[in-house]
Image (cartoon, rainbow, N blue to C red; front, side):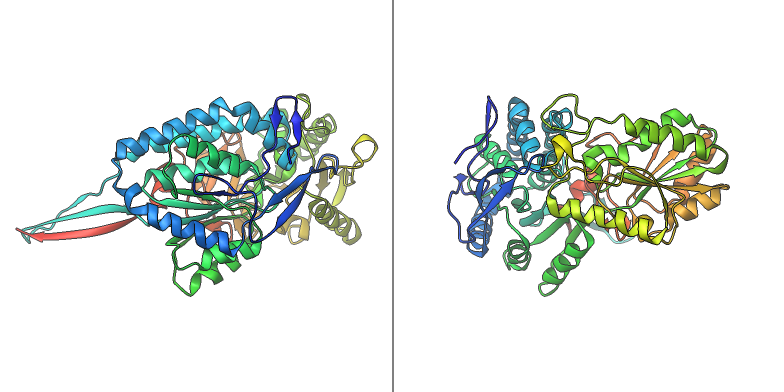
Length: 488
């Protein structure tokens, strides 16, 4: 079974990578993938089950000593070749990602480059990982540390960007000397496997990497497997609790990168048009399905109406449509279930009166009726304690609120159970640095939206998780220190 995405790209018939190749038949059967832009069936794809999990973990455990012992410069060179292959296949991978989750090509065309940047960054670390010498005065001794890999690492990646996630997570895990079993979502059954196949083509030894798309049962089998030494999960809080519960019995370390309810803090001394352009990314980027998307807009009262007017005017001009078209800015939600969930939030908010709907709030019809499209949606004067403000909607819905003082803005921004990101809009740099320290968030961006710097740590606080992706902090997620002491 193959399905054309465009004349030059063909969807692979499997995303399950075991050993040196893709596997066509598995113990868990298959899943039908539906293209969210028009409801057509892409095809039927195998899912990994408990048997494949056990096989992958055993292969990874067998490969671990050799991979760890491989000279670091050789691991570095393998990662660099892997990155080069991602770039060489960037158009193919971008088109596949568009088919898989409906993300517009203007975004997916850049995703392979982002993933490759992370691989190259961590390739540079592969031959520089080392410990430190510990002072022991007044005792005469040599005390030093070794930064060692965990062994077999399970990485559960999200459906909203498996291509980028593969680069972000495989880079540090492999550079540190771990072997890896990746579990993508059943909603994204083929892109991650294609990326894994390119890693094998780059020369990754047998067993060092496996890719096992599957649902919750697959994830639990992986998390609970006694051969897995560490787990890293990216996704929602409810699933994170299940992951923690599964890892509890064997006391496995777990890294979590979870959701957010991130706020833009727009002050009167900022440029309202520039701020509105940045804030609209909260619904346009990934159709609002991004963990760090700024979906709450807090505006100083004196410019509230102006910013609201500019924001809604800009969002009215957003081109929503076929994600394969270069001019499309916003595509569909990932599935019909996601669409219904988002519309449920909208419906309840209108019924409760917790906010005033000023734009959107409907499933789009016409030529888009067969897809999972919800247009940009804005609620003004939102209640801080309401569901729209407090819950992660994961769709193209913005809430707008007023504030009059700096401390009030910070209190509103910090007033959810999440703490992933915040966006400050001000020309007063003293205020910017002061509030950056006051905000309970793992990431604060001032007068801009995030780039993709591989060297920057990314992660959250509170119920947005713990642990970091990116930078030296991301590398340390996949190493553990050993102390060695020798008397002199």
